Length: 419
Image 1 (cartoon, rainbow, N blue to C red):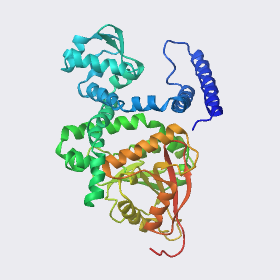
Image 2: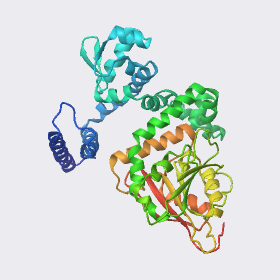
Image 3: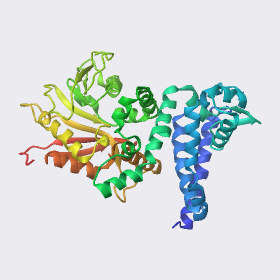
Image 4: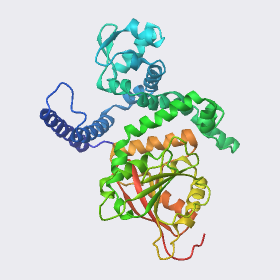
């Protein structure tokens, strides 16, 4: 239950944060807030967390439930807007009449208008005069970037449909001892098979992943700045399951990895499929490898990186992936054993302090993994359990970063394995 002192503290915090935002806005006077300001972004995130918590503490329970029972219809509006291209029906910087929007989208005026008006209440679109609509900063961002529209469409369309089958999938596990993801329960096939059967959806999924990475680009900056990558100069970081190598290419551009006196850090990107369109560069090379198979020896390997791999798999498969790495983590003669780096969301342990916005993102991501792959996000202790099951010598030495995605540094301790 909320204590009065907590409500007062949050109210004061909100006032302080708003004052800070206005001060930042005054530095660059304009009609629109300075959204590109790092200071603005940090203050706005704190304000969002504080106001959400303050609202949750002061909203009467009956009001909360009344809102909750209809909240999913907001997602219905986003689904309609994305599937019928309402975002691109309105020119950026201009307005469009409802008949023109309906003609562009293929919707009738009634459904188009009802959708736009619900979204406008959330600050997405605005009705400038009756039956005439324009963009807001939020809808502009979505309208001008197809990859971001695709990222949202994936969630609002097939993932939303899959989420509605979550209870059915869990019932299958309980009643039939049949482990099936909600996605497979909804569409009849696992997610990867679904996209193989529907190439147009697969194209949107690929583009959506690009958009999701763009929205999450701060995590790459955090990965770059929070860990001493320069210690690997003269060696290779093996990016296991690295896909198209966007992480390795980003890290390879880090200025502090290049020195006139020391050789650069090289990156070897591994994945089960390597598209022919990917070209090797001086510091980034591509190799085909199935991470369920034993990791081939890389003589100059100083680190093996697993980014957003383990959260796609159940425990037993994670243990297989980690076990396959152990031979390559053995010390090579007089050379020190390479480091294993796991770049994943790290869910807070019970009682561990965490920023509310980060914690919410992790918990939502955890259910996303449940719905799509019957997989999960994990705590530090859960990661250590997986590592110990793969080989008791694998021990976490540290966790780096301050964002949703952290970097877990793992060492293979000396001594005989009991695995």
